[in-house]
Figure 1 (cartoon, rainbow, N blue to C red):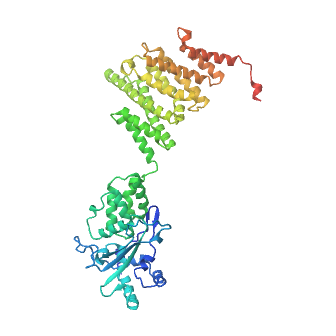
Figure 2 (cartoon, rainbow, N blue to C red; figure 1 turned 60 degrees about the vertical axis):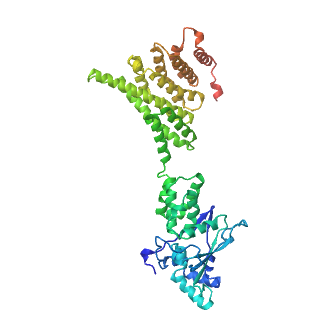
Figure 3 (cartoon, helix red, strand yellow; figure 1 turned 90 degrees about the horizontal axis):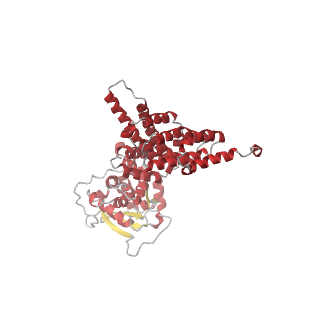
Length: 502
């Protein structure tokens, strides 16, 4: 008996082409061909194969240089019949006539004992039983040549015989690298090595698979084989295909967004690539949470920078204060651009409802913006800051007006109420308006007026009065403003419809 510390381990049956490769006890009965199956079955019920493997006598360790030759009948002491067993699967597809489906191989017990499957069959426990049967039936071994005859049935598959022969040949070498030279080869050999409990070969296959890339199909095969490996063997394979934690996708997306908007030198290209990843990402709620998280961070930075700029601390040196002010404006401008990109992504994915609500609750922020834009200092430092902030507002307001985002009445009202003054200040305090800015302001005017038309008459009355600055020297140049007031007056002059509400 082997001591407990050296117990052989059990290998579970392995998958092949999504079907379990289960080798029936008939394959073991065939080791002793003249013995009746019923009698062998009775003995196996008393002594299981697992018990046999656990108590098998240790085979002499294979030397680094193996002198015995594979399939050498002159020195072999084991004859293995390798054949296709159609009973191993519920269906059978005939092999081509050119394929060998039943062959005889000459092997050496001291060599094939490297595989625990053969070590068990050749152990003292089985051999004592064999000798007893030989004395009574003269069946299990050729007494003249001292040959042991074994039978190994394999699944009916085009490459099954070939792969088994390859693994049997690997028993005669320690140089697995010459054979296991691709992921597909390792995946062909590994199931057979598991079947024969050929530990050295299993280890080599697993180590190779750990180190090389896989195709999509190869990855599927790896996933089918992982449950058949021990925990320590499958650890690295699992680490490649299994996330370490539930929110790994969100952490990955967040890291990509942060890299795209903050750290990468080729920012435009990277932003475009990350935008595509977000569009293609199947878990919309995860994308929402990631974008909202980044949005809140960028908005906080812009707000804090404008707050510090609008309420500076003049107690220090004048030059130092001016440098800090310039830094605050540049920080607001940089993060404002990030904010605009995030808003565009959220609208594109239809996950901007929270952003709209947040944007409508910025009374303090919009007050800081008005103070900043009434000052002339920003013009020579960040002349594009008003346009960046108003583009964010315009994107969100357009999504609300178009129905892409279904915002509540209070959100719609506050969005216009808080941001309309910022638009007015930007228009009134820009001496030379760029054509792009003029288009932006006009678009935002039209969008605000459309949102106002969705509000109750009393709210619309208050907000429309603040829109008089939209008017131009030529009344015909502001049709959007004319239409908005005409709509309000038409509704106001209609007779009450309260009776229709009953």
